[in-house]
Image (cartoon, rainbow, N blue to C red):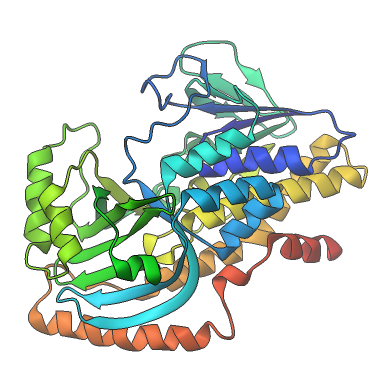
Length: 423
């Protein structure tokens, strides 16, 4: 059985690890991972797996308990390495631009640099697992195996299963759904910038680790420690409302920094002021959200991660949901193969099963994150006060509801087992 994974990000790498972990030893299989761009050179030339550069440490994310649970299932050593590379926190802290406390939400979360996490995942796979060659098209036809075609004109490859893990601008999703606008990602109206500040972490972060979010009339500013192995690096980010930046346009770094300082220049937290003074921005990250898709795959081709369900950053679940997808797909496929189904039938059942196990969960997370609509920015004084009052109440309500239902308590193995018992 041949599996081709398109995309070597969080969802692609974790899916490859999950398949290698759970597919039965009696089933011969080959897994190939293709990605557009070599992170070491910035080019796509058929090269194999370098380490991702850590020069862009500011590309950070937060892993919650359910994401770490998946990594533990896949490989306890992977979970240990990931945990050591991040900065474990016990809660989110919400504050005003004037540094007044709005509330704390108690949740286990691991802020971590995305390049650090990518390297942890790559180290778990055999050397050379990722081939940097751009996939131009995936051809699917009922009753036939999917065919992967490459931009450089190299020979097509036929696979039993193609996994589209190629992110928000997924080529695989385009080939499954065509150019219909209702299946394309929607710009959320906000962008993010961020970086790493070389500064001794303050006492309050070391003694009471937290991800801090400061809310104001012009956006959100947040920070946490970068990694527990270095107490002199602060991970920070700014999220703000803006028109969608044009793709391929040359960035004006001086203007980006000027705008950052204008947004947060009068905010009072001393670490924010240090970040503004020393900011060195190299990129802008537009935020997109995927509409609910009617299915995630067909004819031997399936979507996972952002390609299927890009979530708003407010959910805090983007990476964790990508990991859950990969584990669920691998568990389903392994189970159907162990029951004696042919690879073709096992893949077909697994593609359907992944959607039925996972779609309601990720759509629910997205709906929760989108339920609170931000007012247009910059906000008036009255709107800002309203925001603070709403947050003050919301944090306390969530602390109560979390006692009864937590998004990070969902367990992939349990959910898949329940599904298989009824199918």
